[in-house]
Amino acid sequence: MNLNKSYSKCLKPLETHTIHCEGGHTMKKIIYFMSLIVVLIVIWRQIGETQAASLPSSTELAQDDFRIIVQSVSSDNSPMQQMSFDIIVANADGVPVPSDKVQMQIKMPKMLCGIFPATIREIRQGTYEATVVPVMKGRWEAEASVRIGNEQYTVRHPFAVS
Ligand SMILES: [Cu+2]
Image (tube, rainbow, N blue to C red):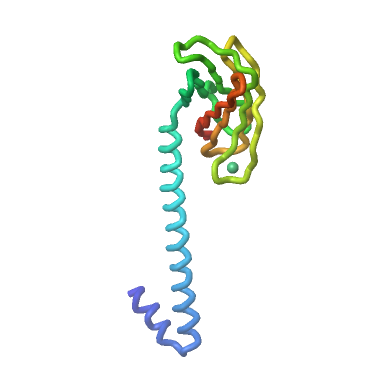
């Protein structure tokens, strides 16, 4: 019955017909398009969360006779909260090795929100605590560089802020 009503509307003079039917059609297109975007955002966020959950809590580099480990130690990984990481420098036998210089910076790969240097503090021989504040949610990468003698070692440790 309703169908008949709108159908008869469409049989009105040409102008009315065009406005009524085309307008309805465009609206449908917009609603369809918007729900498509919502669905895509939901899927994209779930993929992001799955990837974040599968990120390792520590990353290790074994090079020359050294092992350098960067590990996430914070339980709170919300944006604008201080996060800390341990940078552990040892030899192949696990004996701590003091580094001549330890630095760390964080950034979001493929984003332009910036590169943020961490504050480094030696908490015991061969173990350095890096603290930094990630500014937004998402996937980040910490890049730690450790100098031992004349050699420079770089470890890239991915982590998530959610
Ligand atoms: Cu960003």
